[in-house]
Length: 151
DNA sequence: GCCAACGTTGGC
DNA sequence: GCCAACGTTGGC
Picture 1 (spheres, chains in turn green, cyan, orange):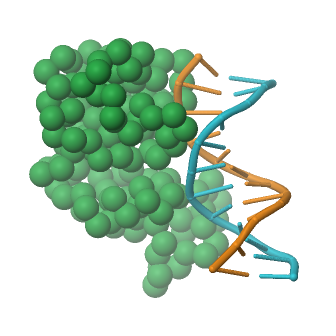
Picture 2 (picture 1 turned 180 degrees about the vertical axis):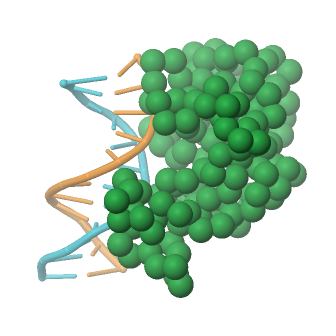
Picture 3 (picture 1 turned 90 degrees about the horizontal axis):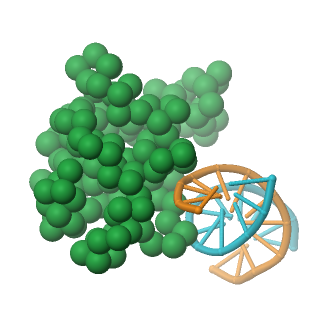
């Protein structure tokens, strides 16, 4: 089992939105970065644990715990010309983008980015590195446990 | 709104 | 295959 941090803009899908969805599950659509796509396609397994992170918002930070509930499959939004995430180079025969499904495990207390930055134990987390933009990053199991034990 | 970082594109 | 230009991300 692996551990991941997945960024979501709360104006798009917040932890409360996730909690309100059917089965408390969301398709992680809209990933248009090859490295992040490859994590979903090649490495994510059902049951993998996810830190659900709010980004690009007034209060960035960890908002809850989730898990991978379905293996990667083609992202529907790439086929829809009216959609923001439409990709003219993608076809049904040759999809370019995939997504997993993510299901809520628990809405936790909110752990702000500022707090994460304060723990020396987490200093090597990718999310904390200057210039990091990757929206899906693997998390070291010890870092995951450290964070969960403080939520 | 600024700006650093970095991924992508496309001409050559 | 190089690399300059451009676009996007995301914290502040």
